[in-house]
Amino acid sequence: MHLIWLRSDLRVHDNTALSAAAASGPTVAVYVLSPKQWLAHDDAPCKVDFWLRNLHELSKALGELNIPLLIRHASTWEQVPLVVLELCRQHGIEAVHANEEYGIHESQRDVAVDKVLQAHGIGFHRYLDQLLFKPGSVLSKTGSYFQVFSQFRKICYARLHSALPRLISAPNVQLPPAISSDPVPSGVAGFAPPGETLRQLWSAGETEARRRLESFAEQQIDYYKSERDFPAKPGTSQLSAYLAAGVISPRQCLHAALHSNQGEFESGNEGAVTWINELLWREFYKHILVGYPRVSRHRAFRPETEALAWRDAPDELAAWQQGRTGLPIIDAAMRQLLETGWMHNRLRMVVAMFLTKNLLIDWREGERFFMRHLIDGDLAANNGGWQWSSSTGTDSAPYFRIFNPLSQSEKFDAQGLFIKHWLPELTELNNKDIHNPAARGGLFGAPDYPPPMVDLNQSRQRALTAFKSLPSRQAVGAGHE
Image (cartoon, rainbow, N blue to C red):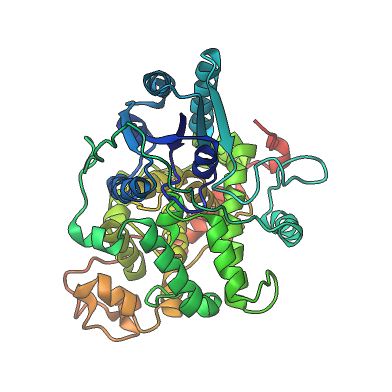
């Protein structure tokens, strides 16, 4: 008997470990609930709910293959090795199969499981699955992990041209084992269930993920480059939550994009090429997680920025978190996050720069808040995005590039459609005034909306002064850890 240990790979199709286990012999699946670990990682309640709903759908799909899904509990990952070992003993498991995960805690957990299983003569096989390239296989000429995306992307394109990762067939139906599936719980202690509206926005299951991918590839990907920055338009794939939970794979996404672009990576339709680049950004940040583990430890990628004099401003942080800054595009974006568990990517950058530059509040506060509310929360992507916006990370925006939320609003939501949707108190304002109600004087027409919490020009200068005072990168050193 073989065991497939499911983690962030909640699908039947194109699942490397699942197919390998099933090809090796009779197979049973397990998913381990770890609520204290999830709390320690700031996983959002809506994200945990999404996992459980996808597990429920996956259990049905596995059932059609006669692969029972067992549910086990290990409050933290320190308990996982013994939980997995006990399961193996209980069912006479000869080998465990799992897809690789990345991050310090994930790596420590898997090393511990491997050690315990080996000591008891049980095999532990791990597979590349949630990435196109194994971390450590895309390196610079000096043998180090790339720190600049464009250089990383160039190597990735060359590899993809020579050997495109293939899609892996779903397992065949096996003979029914004498093991019954466990019921998938509808909730986990410590994570309040989200409202039904949010659940309807994010329907669970592999069928839904594949429907979204097919719809995007057929109808929207051609316009991705030109429309992805406009939050009122359906310009993005809305697949990030499904990728984070592994309900769909990056290989499936890549193949769909290439199919829509006649197999081209760097030419043809600009929308498809731009979206493939976004898949590679996701890849890049996962590689950074492995190559520079300090980013898993709440530390800046650029060590010299650890000396930044971040402000302790709890009231301002709370106003940002609650969408009460007095800057409509910021507040609308934060309300979108709070109500849907998701935020448009352009706005993620705008609100992150506002927090870290205009308010000069530590990027880690924003990173943590996002993780606690995002249905697509992913350590590598979230950390990479926050450090880019705060000018502390790889490929980061130069510290003097500070998005102005008013001009961003006017450029990407010119008619105020996104703002009006999330800030109904401003619906009576015209297309000019809605971006900056305070400019009207006395906020006539929007009496319940707060004035801007900060002067954008003065706060920009404050940020520039703080960054200019930092020691040089060479003086601090940017070595590996």
